Image (cartoon, rainbow, N blue to C red; front, side):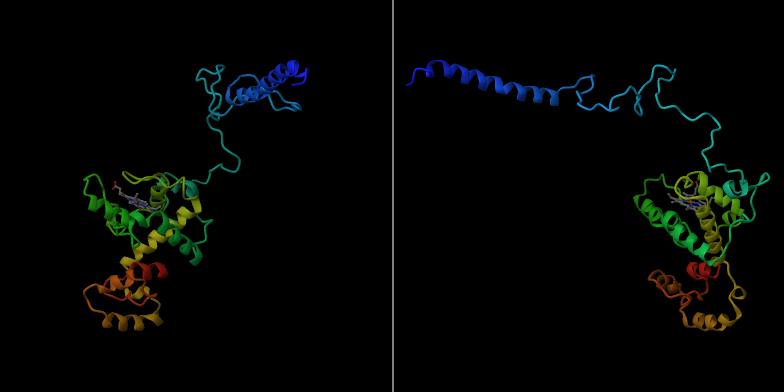
Length: 258
Ligand code: HEC
């Protein structure tokens, strides 16, 4: 063994031990918490005093750093002064008609039908008789807490002004939840129009059908059995106006007429 080995061995041991120190420091820095900002070579404005969302701030009596808007604040573009459009109210009464700025045409009705099928049919059923899937399931569970949705074809709902139905969607009614946060104003009116069409569909008479289609409708009605099988055909995706002529007119046909 050469003579220099006598002093170099301890030096190597010391160096190896020292080389662990940076590793230990990195581990410590990564696994510990400190209120001080991390060292940064180019600090820019990375670290400044601020309050984070949901943090507390002793300056205010309620200790909340996030401040609620001052009472009466209206966000830009959200001033709803048109009570007919936004609340369904004219004067002190529920509006009897649709807001004049809305054009009630076929595409408006189609939109209403689509939105109705998404937001309402689950409970109220596609034809508005209150027999949607949620209602059926709740009846099956028989927990005794379910209040069935009111059929649109009851005299009560048939006599409701459109403004009242609009408000039912916006704010809910009794056990029905509100849909105002999910359905925008115009879509709510479109749904109201479609609800009206559903109502009409159950009480339409032959004179509501365009004259040139009455004859075909009569022929179909005669061809159908009187026991209501028309409904099942309809549910299976019946063609337009193919089954509507049964003794009771069907929801979908009426919706298209309206
Ligand atoms: C979660 C189920 C559910 C959904 C979804 C639902 N409703 Fe209802 N709705 C009800 C129930 C339940 C009632 C009856 C409330 C009661 O009598 O306590 C009702 C009642 C009504 C009434 C009659 C209220 C009256 O007295 O005039 C109308 C109109 C109505 N809903 C429209 C709608 C429309 C439109 C939608 C879609 C935007 C909708 N509902 C979505 C459950 C629902």
